[in-house]
Amino acid sequence: MHPLNERVYQTGCYGRKTGAGWFDYSGEKPVPNPKVVGVVQNYLKENGIGPKTMTSKDMMDRMMARAINEAAFMIQEGICDRPQDMDLAMIYGTGFPPYRGGILRYADAWGVGNVYQHLVTLEKEHGVRFKPCSLLKEMTEQGKTFYKI
Image (cartoon, rainbow, N blue to C red; front, top):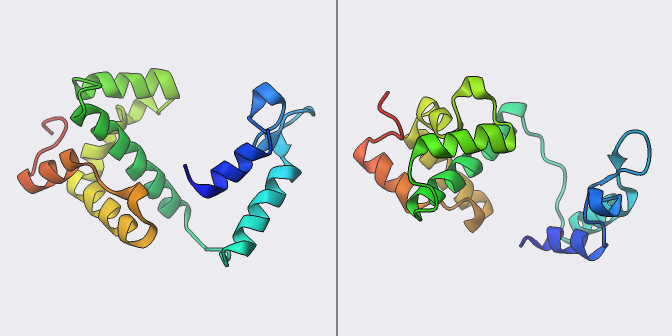
């Protein structure tokens, strides 16, 4: 677990079930939880981390690359047998946009090699949490996709 997540957890703000997590749910609309905001600000200050400018595309690519990596890892580990099953689970279980066809169809559209290279770059910049699973590496080396496109 990331140290920042551990600090947030230590506040006792576990989300909706406690009425507050990253957001405070006590009012009509959820708002950022001041207790958690303070923890985050202290963590950033203690670790000398300043603001970083990112485009919305950079943020989306980063999140999608990690999600694709986790989906591929589940296939690699035999937790899920087929890409179709993973895509259905992501659509019905997490609300992944159906018009995208699922997370692994999205990976094929982006290019498995592009996803892999993006993760390699992110791993160099940010550490092991972005390490690509071996299935993505093998697929990239062999020019394979999750679906035949």
